[in-house]
Amino acid sequence: MDKFLIEGGVPLEGEIDVSGAKNSALPALAACLLTQEPVTLRRIPLVRDVLTMLRLLERCGAAVHSEDGVLRVQAAEIVHPEAPYELVKTMRASSLVLGPLVARCGRARVSLPGGCAIGARPINLHLAGLEQLGARLSQEHGYIIAEAPDGLRGATVHFDRITVTGTEDLLMAAVLADGETVLSNAAREPEVVDLAALLIQMGARIEGAGTSTIRVQGVRRLRGAEHAIIADRIEAGTFLIAGAITRGHLVVRRCEPAHLTSLLHKLRQAGVEITQAGPDALAVRAPGKLVSVDATTEEYPGFATDLQAQYMALMTQAHGISIITETIFENRFMHVLELVRMGANIRVEGRQAIVAGPTPLSGAAVIASDLRASASLVLAGLAARGQTVLDRVYHIDRGYERIEEKLARAGARIRRISDL
Ligand code: EPU
Image (cartoon, rainbow, N blue to C red; front, top):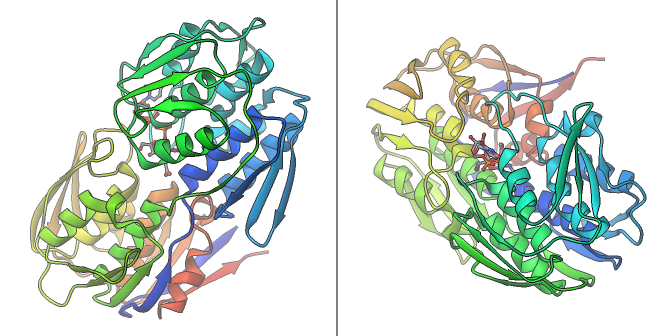
């Protein structure tokens, strides 16, 4: 299992490029199942979750071709409309193939995801929506079987709570359904908008993506398309925090500042200086005192749960008390005990973490428990005195493309060691 060895205390300087968004790439790849024709996708980050999704597409019968960072997927024929447990258990987003498979083939068999490090994460809302589109659902041996032999029918689907992949799954099902579908209380994340942009290029008729009501007029078939994935706002946010926590001067390039509004607002309130350094670049510095600022995670455009752990690492270096409230997932504080082992003063009370700062951090041996928790420990390691050894970096490889190489190019002393 690979580890990261980090020597902290070096301010990051220079430029760092953001990759395409993992959480946009995953639904875009699932959307390739909706057409027989080739779909060409640019800026797909080659992270582990994307590789898992490619394996899943291949298992369904799609041909995948990758060259110079461009992926071409062609699902001329779907041989197995299935997502097996071995793949779903390593990546919950595998359930994104459910909607496209049942829409295209009239049948899908998808393993139910089990528990997860950050919370229960059921897919009941995906299933309830598909039922409303006319799919018959049954369950056996841990699998959901969705059947719609005569095709799906448009309907009004109201989500009881906002779900990102649920919205994406239903959007992909609705584009081939007969008639109009209205998705209400839909997720407004930029990744949903990006998926809709791809589907529209494929011939889908969609209005309202990016708002909480999405209207879809079903079409009979979709065609191939070419599309570039949006920048990863969570990776960009992680690098902005890296610049601030190391008191460096970093330019984060190829990002979309408009997708980072709530984080930028918090960082500025906390005393971090952020300036626009070009249409798609932000420069970050934190020369002065950092002050504590509370944050509560919310659906987009609120403060992203996927940045909560990284923001908490920064708040350990801010003056005062900050209260960080997690409202999206019930168990997303796994990084707290590891940060405390590095010297942070954090107490968890239910859904709130109370961070008292600033506390000097000192390098320690720590263990990554999930993707964003690992990112927060990398940030803490970069700010700490001495050496941090981060174990189980496969978690970070799920969603960050060669993060250690990107950080090292900005001066970080971080390297990967593999024990054989
Ligand atoms: N929920 C249900 N029933 C459902 C679906 C969701 O109760 O059928 C609950 C979840 O348990 C959770 C809340 O609704 O408490 C929101 O979950 P959502 O469905 O929005 O999460 P997701 O679609 O599974 C995506 C991202 C996550 C990100 C969340 C929230 C992808 C592939 N994953 O997950 O990303 O945290 O939205 O923004 O897009 C990550 O990248 O590290 C990551 C976990």
